[in-house]
Length: 563
Image (tube, one colour):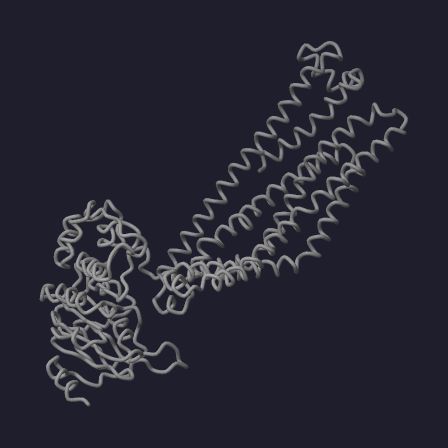
């Protein structure tokens, strides 16, 4: 920025002697300093000054252009590198937030902040800050140079232009802030409409609700585009007025200076310097003004970004995975109660429970009875509001949570599959070069899906499609089981993992679960009692409390005898 500012001054300064030599070389040559320097370089006649001054002027112009390009290259690369740092930090901080934070968030707003609003920050905050800084440096340099040419004329013109830009900024500040709020809100809503419409495409197609989703998207997209359009108009429109005023000012000055004693000959070098200065100065003023407009028009998005950047990181965020916590005996709930907030009702109430290592334990209960919340506490996703959660008599706290979670694998009702190969989905979360292929094959065999995978043309390199669309429900569940086994966890939790399957597929998946090693502790949530037939113990939850502890046979007899 500093080098570019000096180059601008050099190019403006070079025009004055260049035009002077063109108009009256004798007057320039006879100046003491010019005369001495010319003689030192072997220049003996006034007309001989023209060639070196032409070279100097061309070199100054080319140097100024080169440094402006270098400044553009440097500031743009810096802006996007800063944008990458911001996006990565937001994403990282978001992923490290507790499950309770994610449960209370709208995912589309977070994705929009990380992906879309970070671009807004690049274009409308970081780059404008750099532009404004460079504009100020160049303005100071050019103003100083032009003040040396004609301080009164130039100071008057610069003050006039500055006042006009200041008034425009003052008059548009409320509109720009209002537009920033619209842009921030509606970018969230458009992404939400896209996610919901495309995420539920089967229901949209079956229900014929395309127009409804298009209307939701339109109602957000039109105000967003209108606000963006208004900001662009506000930021660019003064340029045309200022350029016209600048040209008119030079014409008036030319007219007035032509009536002076020495006429146009004396005026041309001064007018040339002022014209070049205006040609440099007005775009820089406009850039500075536009930078201020962009920053004011993105205040709300900036606030959203700062909130995501302000998310705290846990103390172990930068540490390698800890060694697993000791687990040889039992998982214990010691008088555990839980609720999501002080004003909310209790989801779990005074739960006392012991799960022995290597046992198969099932949980039954209607929707809202607290089954999933209980398992979230087992997985360390939620902390008990009251009571203690212990493993081998050691309470699980924030300090040893990751050591416990290393031992846990989770198979939910809906398995998340990325649009990558089957092998990568089994070894989920690892880079390709970190995957142990032998362990992948072993996990697939234990989950009873190896035969299907190996029958595919590309085997473990076959792609599953977005969200596993190319696989059946049973195949997705078995890949979920293989994923849990690849992790080599000691505790595998099946959270209604078969509830969406038909009876035949469920039986096949349950056979895979039943065939797992008996040193694994398996916890199963299910709606159907038959799903829990191989469990050592079955707990029934009702209103947040364990109301019954039974084996499968006794529960079946009771269900048969129940009218």
